[in-house]
Structure formats: structure tokens, C-alpha cells
Image (cartoon, rainbow, N blue to C red):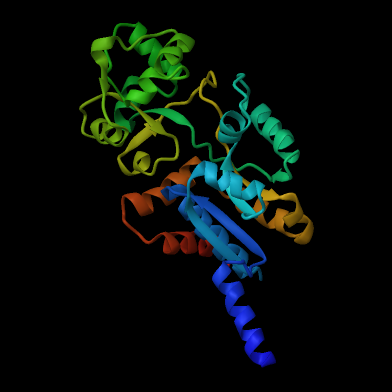
Length: 291
């Protein structure tokens, strides 16, 4: 009878979904986040952790789950925490943004580890050969080219066209205008293909979109830091770090390997080359001797 009761209790625990893992790793529901969740899962398992991976979550749901202790660790963007979770709208530099969210989230028991060099924010992109021929490397260069009389067409989705920190304030900050006839509004997923196919000259994009390198495009330097910083950073519960004192150094080592080009290449492997997410994550870890 004792063995029967023990077995029933074990079955109840499993059925209730109580995690038996040392570390519960979360991830959002888009390619970059799914790659990072898989990478973190495989990396930590190789270092002896028992990992429970829960990828594919909505951003707000994932954040609440971490605050509530259901998720120990996931990769977040500094701008998302600053603006969406903490309601801060003042213009801050990338370093100020990081320090602000680090301080605010510490009050909630969340620790921001070392930020990577991957900054998944808005970006303006051009075909690399066209940008080179025109001598355009930055948004200031683009503004000068347009102000000198060249009419360049711009692909924008409806949101960026209308939002208060979107196209109009960008043009004001840099002192130029595409001109209404030169702005082509379309679904976000169509903007980069339109640029690749020479239907437009400039496009809005996310800076780590894997299609940028795959399509032979280049990101223009936001030399006035108009776009908010969205530095990709591992965020861990304080109590999780206290229980696993080596975790911070281990995650910081992984974070140091990530930048815009790396994430764009990884994203392209999945979104363009249709490779398996787990395989892409494993290959990256293998290349850096992390498994």
C-alpha cells in the first residue's frame, strides 16, 4: 500500500506540471527568441543543469511568469523593459537604458546580466551595392543625399509610418523628408523583399532580421541614436542566481558572443535556409566549444 501511495503521489506531481528542473528557461514566440531558448537550454545542460525549456510564449506572459517565479531565465531587450514593462518614455542612451532597467527590475528580484552587442531595434536598410555607390553609410548620409536633390523611395509598414516615434520624428531628427509620393506603405513582411527586388531604395527593418545579410542588404548607422536601444540581454531571477552561483559568469560568456551580424546570420539559417532551430543553436555552440 505504501508503494501504491508513493506512486500515486508521483503521478499527481507529474500531472500537475510541477517542474523538476534546476533552471526553467523561457523564450518568446519568434525565431530569434526560439534560437536563444534552444541555445541556452543546450548550453546549460552541457554544464550540468537540469533544464526545463518553455519557448514560444508571448512577451507580456513571459515577463509575468518570470516575476511570479515560473521562469528563471530568458533573454530580454532593454528597450522592451524600459518602455513596455516600466513605462519610461524619456530618451536615453543605450548605456543609460541598460542601467535604468537594471535598477528598476532589481526591485522586482530580476537581475540583468551583461548585455550582448546585439541590438534588435528599428533600422533603415539599403541594398549594399546601391548604398556603396551613393556613399551612404549612415542615416545622416541618407539625409544629405535626399537634401541634395535625389528622390529615394522608402518602404514602410503602417505602424512605423504612423507611430509617434516612427517616420515623421525620424525625419525631423535628421532634417530630411522622403516626400509623400516616395513613401510606399506595405505589410512589414514585404518591405525587405521590395528592397531586394529594387521596387524601393530604402526600407524599414529590425536590425537583426536574418533577411538583411541573406538579401545583400546593409543597415544604415543610426548616428544620432534616434531609435531606442533594444540590447539583447540574459535576465535571471535573483534567487536563481543565489542558488546557482556560477550561472552569471556562464551566461555572460554566451552573451559576449552575440552581436547584430551573428543574430542576423542565425535568424537567416532558420527563416531563409529553413534549418532546424535546435540544429542551428547546437552548431553555434559547437563552433565556440561551449558543449
